[in-house]
Length: 543
Picture 1: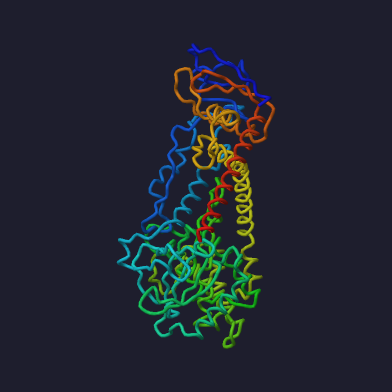
Picture 2 (picture 1 turned 60 degrees about the vertical axis):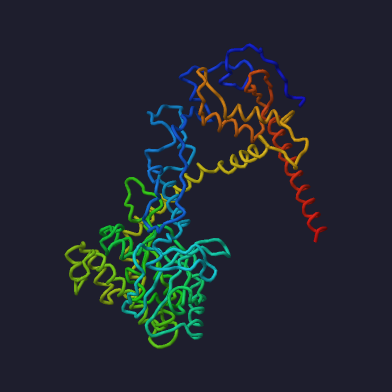
């Protein structure tokens, strides 16, 4: 290249050019400075050890189970050494997602990718494929038993990955002691999917995506409903009413939050000329709770927990009059049942895990504040006729919830800003990995790391393979960030590139190096297309 100037270094040089600064006369750092450099916003401190998190590919995983090496996700494993903050200094976490949010997202990804443990299939044997879904796994760690509720039906919930869009879904197997999946029943189920499709984007509804009949699970054909899968969610019964690993006592702040969320979804459903389904749809086992993405200091985390209706569409099959869809009971009666069901639900949650109370509302009076008890009594006794009155009673807590939601939006926007440049730098790193140490083979008979490609190799060593005066590797994240950012832009600043044997040096600008990488990558792509075209032509001639 015309703009790069080769310089030959003395053969007997005993000094290792550790810093390889941005000019030929850049000084070498001291041992104390070797692991720190000034990036775009100040010096960075390298991570002490980088152990990747690999989710398990097998094993039955409950919704609250953490990955096997969850200790890698704790805040104690920040990718920096702990040190006192100093003015003008920046650390790696300021450029990356917070550890708390990263741990939450990795845990959700772990649950989404988890697969069934064959050793546990003796409790509930699952096929390899169910309709269009594969990688099936039960969504709890309990034997799948048929436990019918007051509505006369039970569910078995399975997670599966669709081979159509690759997304996870919660498959609810609908079973009833007296009804088989006849064509009429299947038609009602398809009507339910169409009826509730208008709520697929509602924040408090688990979207109903489809339905099908299959005999692959169990001994007889059964009707399945496919819902969106929300990783980390558990039923409200398991969360507040059963003594188990997920049990959390319901506080009054939780009850107010649930009341406001249920008011939101009931208002939307009633506004569409439907009903939720009364007590059959608003039982704790028919609702799921999704934990908050992130917690905020100084605020009530209960506002961040998301409550969702998890079984919409099931009552359309057995009791269509419960949702006011097909004659029978009037719509107004079905909608009043929704308010009564919310009151009994709040009273049940206030009672806690003990479910032997014959009158949970009277017990709730001893465990709730006067204002919350008035709300429960008003709902359970038809004292609250519509969502207008309901929402007025929730006005104070609604403003608190709105404040927390906006704080969460600000937090997630800040987290997104930290990750803004990661995709750009990743694409650049992938190009560097493709063109560096390329074996060639049949792709390029004349491929060799000379000329421009030799400059790329030296730049790779300049960025990642530096050593200090004592020969120890320099793990300087700030230096890597700074170099990659300048390379992506292609600035005119020149850098001194030193070969590993210290026999030669090159001076080139970031713009020159960027041009070398683009040219080498283009040659690689061109050769790959030509080779693929030749192989395809040979195969067609053979046919």
